[in-house]
Image (tube, rainbow, N blue to C red; front, side, top):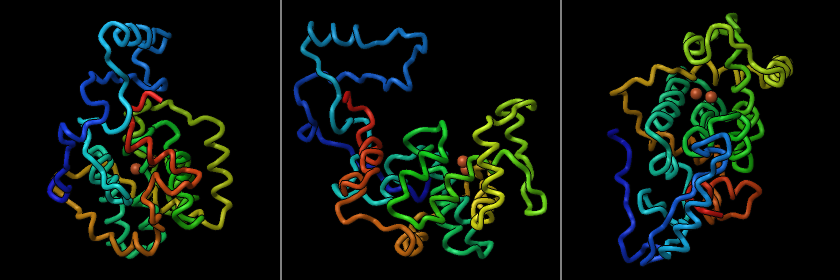
Length: 252
Ligand SMILES: [Fe+2]
Ligand SMILES: [Fe+2]
């Protein structure tokens, strides 16, 4: 991907827990076996037998982030390629269509949780992660796009996505909490902001369409309050979410 910055990896000298094998414990939400066969006992045994330790801090297989990471650092160094491309393409479509910066910012951030944190209930997680740094309207639009994606509004130019018939099966019905969220959102004064997010939320993932994230620098500057200490280190109520993306494999 042309515009992605070249990652820097830690040198051996920088490696935390030097001299030890560092074991990775899967996060409980992502246990390989949902029926309770946790790898923890085997890993604890390995620890006792070999002196291996559990991963804490920087994972050498992940790019190093700057000490005071900013929003685009997470795009460059943490988000998977699909999320990186999808968010940038979505924001670029909104920008080219002449949408205002609130809509462009919401498009740029709408699936931020899918980038490197959690997919399940991603609109809610995403809205929470960004809430201290964006306007209430942007956070609201990000949260509500999750529900609005399931409900057509052809007058506004949004059809139920064909992809959802493939992803979930043609009989899929969203759960009641999303149906409720949709009904409430329809009556809300910011409905169209979130609806526009769903309209520019395309699944074509156009390969070869490299959107340069730096073109959003000014819009981010005006619409996303980067904390001076860096995301993850500002003691905000959501700092832990950003730290979890920086060190996603911490044992605790
Ligand atoms: Fe989404
Ligand atoms: Fe999306």
